[in-house]
Length: 182
Image (cartoon, rainbow, N blue to C red; front, side, top):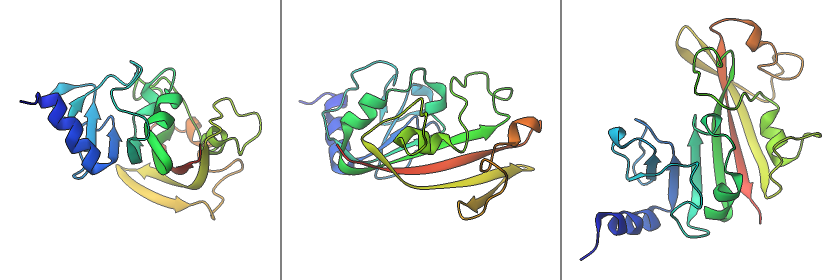
């Protein structure tokens, strides 16, 4: 007889898509993981504890929405290890005046961080050589509603978000999609 954990791992292999730090935003056909059992994820996992409990090349798609900014350091090696070659990684992270709104943020990223992660921006502090930036877009939160602007629009010198940290209560998010090329 299988334990509940073994059954969950089999379900995950069928889904082949991972939702890191899912919180209340669980997605069907994804293996939803979170550190909190209160949100009833498919599996409770502390992403700071490595190695993660999945085999190499387990997932064709990984979503990390509003989770990596809470980790220090960001476990890039584990993210790449469990992502299959040619797989996609989607990272959604806040920019702007978020450090005062959520004291659990360990990373304070901006528009340029998406390019720095893949090494496309010089002097990258978080360069992950196996990730190639495919797309990125930006949305800002105005009165609780998220508005999207795509990269073809230059909103400010240095890209969107360069000025947002100066405005209390104004924040946005960047969505970056990468391809994993080992």
